[in-house]
Length: 241
Image 1 (cartoon, one colour):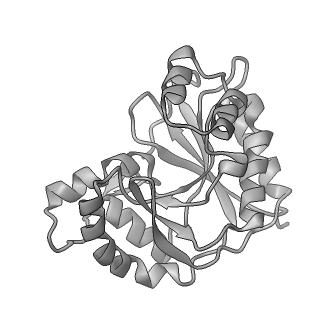
Image 2: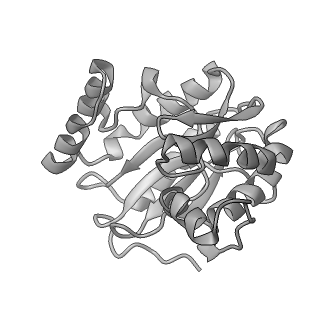
């Protein structure tokens, strides 16, 4: 059972793509992370030769908290005067005005120090969906506080990414956006090199023909540091009657 946030102001919200719960990618990904974000249930992780369960738990700790997903609009707190009910209603309208998007074959890829699943090339339709979500829901986003802005600015960001932080509260949006499903926390090169082959084998059944982006999902972090929960899915396209 998903616990409701103590208050709208304490919670953070995010708009993600999460693979359908009945697809291979969802089953493999949730098992790899050791957690199902839709139910907040712990799952048995598949064994990986050369890595203990404790090591794998540490490797997946960060993405496990967020749940298996690809980010469309990054986590945000609600602006003053906005409510979760308003956000859900806006999401329903947004989803109804958009069409499903084909997701090309995925591959294992290093993004910085992380391992993720990502398309081999950028897809304009996916980029457009993410950009539309960032812009459409920016009015729901509370401005970043001084500590958050300072933390972002202390990172090694390009001028374009710094401009995104100032405008949208997050560096990797709009032209800096790259669709991906994060599978690990930050890794040393040696650990990443050892992990990539068995991880590619584990996800091979799921990535050649991944499911379409036919819905978007609202995720909620009920309170700071809590695991993100998949609260509701919104099908893309007009509602069937």
